[in-house]
Image (tube, rainbow, N blue to C red; front, side):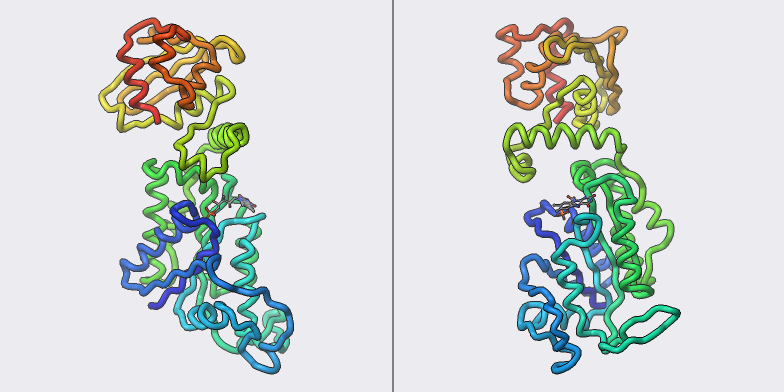
Length: 353
Ligand SMILES: Cc1cc2nc3c(=O)[nH]c(=O)nc-3n(C[C@H](O)[C@H](O)[C@H](O)COP(=O)(O)O)c2cc1C
């Protein structure tokens, strides 16, 4: 089976979440023996349709534009047995790159009106391939894909063989080792296998693909301190990642969320400890977290028997968390105080990050 995969994301260099999901799907397809060609249409020259209808009249089936679409992409699309259309969700629908491609597929229909099942359509000039729609979104709710799904269903009808939509994709991509995220990605690969074998994805596999991976409240807290840090430091997301930056908590609540999200269960196997924080300054208050063999529990307030108590100005500790200040150096300079076993302080550096 010849699969033609269109990736319309403008992001490159491992940054694209569309590509992340598309690659998972393609992996499964290839395992089932499919021949897959991927085209990143952002890098191609695809002119806008100018609505001249030359492809319907003077040169039936052929567009006036002699660009990459006419010369390469449209012929490959029409010759394929299955086409994957993968797009980041932009303003609740396909992005402009994919929309431009879709509009340029006008040559495969004829100009006439044909009434079928109460709906007027254009008769086909050539049979286009079945379609699999893939998309990723920034917002965490599945409802963000409603318009895209309605559009793809209306446009491709029975030709639409599957829809793989991943909300909260930016956050999901930060948690590739998380067991739920892993099972979603594995299910996308399984979906690829099933599409080649059975021309559809089973209900069970779709159920796993659509498992909610991220708690929406947690995600919002992380997203908000992440963007605020980008704004404050004047960096783009790409630069943030390249510089290995950490979102800066602005409250006790966001500090606890960050600690939970930044916790590395593998690095804390066999370790047990309770950390108490007493913050002063801009954000006064107490909170603590307990680590027990790969699990973390975070809470505001006071712990019964902490192994270590850190008394610090909130701002200073956030400087340490975001690597603006050196923790040991600040300790030597007595900018914060520690009561308890210092080994727990050293361990903290290992289990977060
Ligand atoms: C112009 C623009 C519009 C976007 N519109 C939406 C949207 O309507 N809903 C949403 O959930 N995410 C939206 N996003 C977020 C993207 O869907 C999200 O960042 C996605 O992961 C990008 O995919 P990529 O990494 O393959 O480029 C938008 C992003 C941009 C840049």
